[in-house]
Length: 484
Image 1 (cartoon, rainbow, N blue to C red):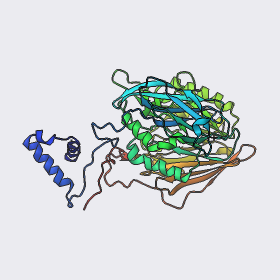
Image 2 (cartoon, one colour):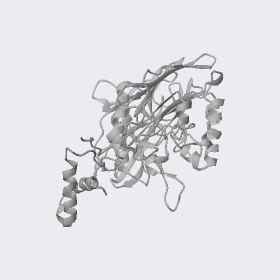
Image 3 (tube, rainbow, N blue to C red):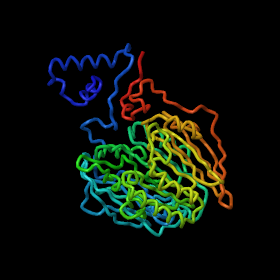
Image 4 (tube, rainbow, N blue to C red):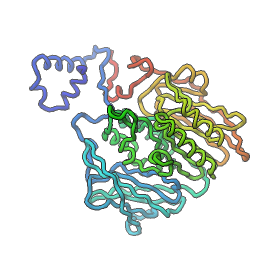
């Protein structure tokens, strides 16, 4: 343990110092002096994946409902799934929903539903994760709802159901958050809602959290602290990444962690045995299809099964636009990564059915490319929203239209009948990449680049931890400025 890290742990534990050996006291005192010295050239940092000090229960379950989210169903114009968390309750949790009006008397006309739940125990206590799916909603209608806790209620949230047929709107797309989610990802997602305040969809390409060694509820607490009321008012479309899975010594095969299904009861219309992570949702003339690349890469049978399901979903698709999203890229951007099974089983289907966009994560870099041969084919994008940053490969720099390192990003897709305006913005709101995808009446497509006249971004970290990455993502929470 480094001296600065020891100091941080020491200061969070009252009374510990008096019980240390004399030699250790001297070492700690030296650490305190060194970390406050103006002559210091650099400060070691404490590797950490959350901002929660050891021993604290920042995200302890309680009587109050939290982690409230809108989860898209297969047809969110007419149905909606709601999820939230409380402490264990003796009675079923409730949801009240009504058409929104300016009057505070929302409860007078609200319809009440009892929730189902799953239980999940973590270091933050024994929790019930509640979920309700409401059918029979009216398209393009503003609704208000609230959910109950143990003897209490949440605030009233509002959301608008999508229209029943195509109508222009904007969707938001995010790559990996994964590390330092509250500390660093939060600014990205907040800036996205300033840019697209009426977005109807928030789409995540996996690795929402890290969860490498099991259940880390503080990470999920930080995830929901970052997305906050946005998750409760904008439909959520998540794909599972490899960090939503875990393995252990007894079973090296990665398995989906219970946190995922507890927080995200997705549409459930995927293939058997994969319906917790594979699904589609039709939102106002756009079909969104989530695939599970983790399962596909660790079991060829799962890659084939998803390919068969995907063919059927694309063959019977009445929507104007189609977006497929999954975690691992078809064409990797970062150094030393490659996913041949996805190109073997999935890419031919994307091109056969002329999918419009394939949105991905995993590589902790940015890369965008397309072939659009014979005026058809997808645009492939890889992006990153959190602070973990890798390096772009020489091959990606050579073949991709736009790449980036060391850059937190979010993307907007503004759908209209004849075109989609794609924009990639940095976490500070600057335009980084842009194009217009035009679609003619016969279905043929044309792409017009609108890349800003700025240089591609490269790693600016003066002391990267490894030769294949710019930042670890766990080295930024307690980082201090370099002092001279």
